Image (cartoon, rainbow, N blue to C red):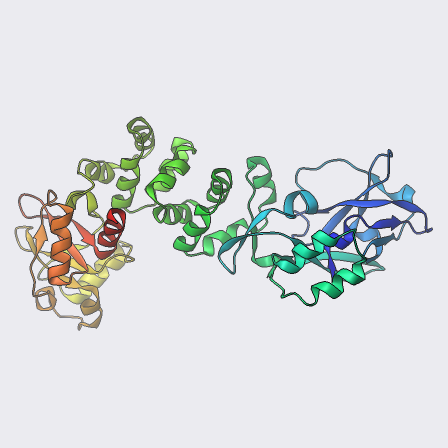
Length: 411
């Protein structure tokens, strides 16, 4: 096992034992292989820098590298923005520890040696984010590599496997080219991803957000506070912001748009052809039942059977993440009760919704204050509450998640 700090600065000799230069940089070419050192930049005084390919390296030890060819076979260095530079892009940079779900700083990088076809390939194994790597960096060049290794053996290791690393790349051009493991960000829970983003600078936050697909971006932004939501969305093109907001439930989309400046909000809405529900919600004060409700609810006839309702949910591809209740209508389309999802699951196929309905028939108009909503949730131990219009027609629902979010904002 080698460390990047032991390879950078190493004296390099060609196949005839002639001194070529010192290792100035190690490059990874993500397009070829995401963890292999593809090229080594060699520098020697006033001479133009040379580049050795991964298949031209004979051996590597701390402080020294030997090549399989003579100097004449090496290429002249030509900068390539698609390469990832060990010293420039990794050491001392912030990264996302995908396994630990946090932002950390790179102190050093562990490199495995793989012998193949008469040469040695260097592959990134671990990122050192602990004290051992920091001490190694501090002592590099002051004491021998052997002594540094003796000292670091007494220090607790703190490493991250390279495959659990996600680079934070603020530069849009490099971000597109590198994309080392950007897609893996989508596997994090939105709340964890939001916590990570809050620890980043605005440029870094924007780079992480831009690397996400629209669905993951919508879930993550819903977990951020309103200040950061606006900051991120205002930096996007209106069309891109609209696509992300369209992935959000209408109530969350309305909350985000409410926090944005009116002119910017209109620009985004203009890019949302299916924005009627969101526009309707924007008419309500955010601190009322209408402003808190979600219009994506399941409303069925009270005489429907359990099988008919399940078929309706399946056929309409309804998202059930926040669906705690199915709401019922009478023959005049007026609110007639609700059925908890758990009761629906446990019911027999032919059971009527009226037989499964909750005992408490409670609803609120959209003008009801948030305090009235909180009191009803507390009084009846509700998980969701139906919102009805002036004719008592169901128009939306408030879930316990909405209540928690609003209470958190008041604290």
